[in-house]
Length: 317
Image (cartoon, rainbow, N blue to C red; front, side, top):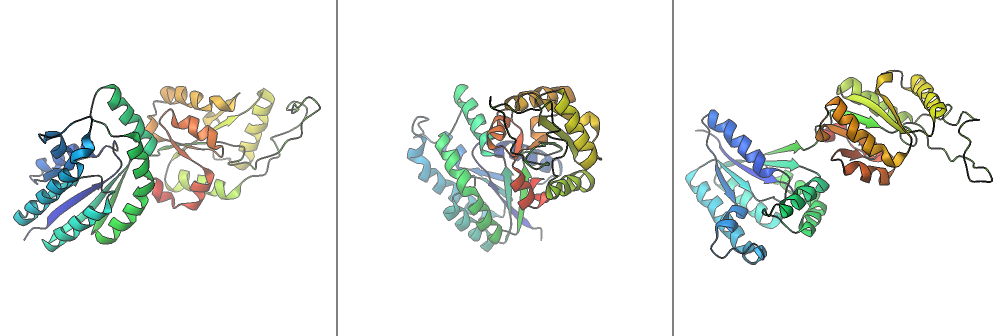
């Protein structure tokens, strides 16, 4: 007797769940494996009482209809995919437990796309007159999704994470990230003498970060770049000297300097075009939260050093 499969998709609105289903169905049709698809959103769109200006009015009804469809598929033993986001644990848990009674192998597939990407996609849908959700709904669900993952992992037979970011290329900041942050003295005019002193050459290294960087390069085979703000050519040479001493494994051609840190994201945008790197292949590690927010505007993954150190590297892939 063949195993019956029920797949529950988990992800924010705009995460790419529908695109994943299309690709998954295509692959399985080629292998002559058929799946039924249940979507509360599709039920809502096709319902005679649907009003795009007030979609929430029939939200609960459509959830109930989707749940009924799942049980009907369960009774017939069809392989089935539920596209419902999975963040409302109450009815998702109830449906999973019922499908288990029908003898199904339960897989939770998490389409892990960051909230800011989902919001951008949602805004584009609004501009194009397509189906969208209130931005507040995406933000609310982004705070609740981790709890949902925790809950659904416990009751499913299998959990799969499909990351939006492939994280093939890592761009590291220097000061405060790989080199210890310095508080530099200023003169009576409030200026720092970057020319007369070796300001950056003797910075202490942040060894745990360098260890992580080595793991990324040597174990996970990720390509590593340096993007650092540097006020002048003298400081450029000092920083290159520091990298040669502490990061001997970094190719000199992969070290870049930007005059103003507030334009690091603009520089990276043009660099990605030159190197033919897609935004979702790229991860930036920087200790400045404001700079990370600027990087987000070009669609790349952003990671604070604390997150890189406190999480298993496998969580990024």
